[in-house]
Length: 212
Image (cartoon, rainbow, N blue to C red; front, side, top):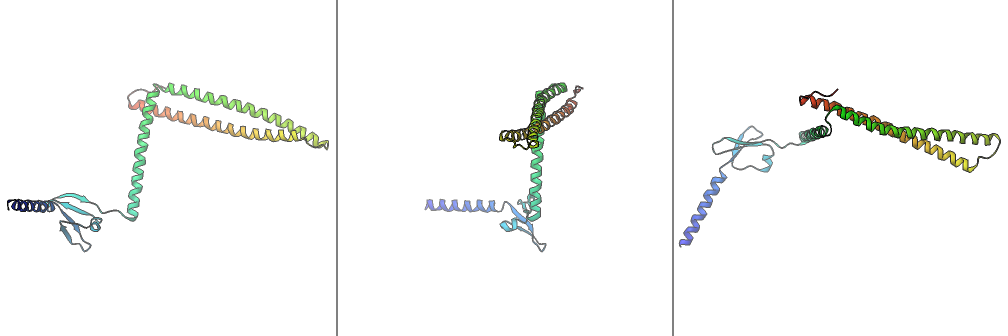
C-alpha cells in the first residue's frame, strides 16, 4: 500500500510538471480574417505562416518570420549567394594583402622582381622570333625550289613537298607560342602593377610613405 501511494504521488508530480512546462510558452498568430489567436500549441502548417512566442506573462520572447516561398525564396537564396561571395572576396583580399606585405618591404622590391620576370619572358620571345624568321626564310627557299620545278614542267619532289608542309606547320605552331608568350608578358605586367598599386595603398594605411 505504501508503494502504491508513492507511485500515485510520483505520477501526480509528473503531471503537474508537464502541465507547468506545457503552459510555460504560448503561440500568438493572426488568422486570415484578422483574428489574433493565442494558443499553447501550433500546427506546422500554421507555423510556416509566422508567429510569436510568448512567456507566461504575455511578453514576446521570440518572433518567427513566415517561411519564404516562390520569388521571395529565390531572392533570399540569391542574396545569400551574394553575401557568401562578398565574404569570400574579402577574405581573398586579406590573404593577398598579407602575402604582399610578407614578400616585399618596398615598392622597388616589386618593380625589381617584375623586371626579372619580364626579362625571362622576353628572352623566350626573342628565341621564338629568331626561330620564326629562320623557318620563314627556309620556307621561302622551298617555295622557290617548287616554283622552279613548275617553270621547268618538272614534278615537285615528294621530299620537297614534305619539307614545305613541315615548315608551314612549324611556323604556325611558333606563331601560336609567340602569341601566348606576349599575352603572358601583358598578364605579368598587369599583375605586378596591381601589386604595386595595392602595396602603396597599404603603406599609406600603415602610416608609412610608399617608396616612389
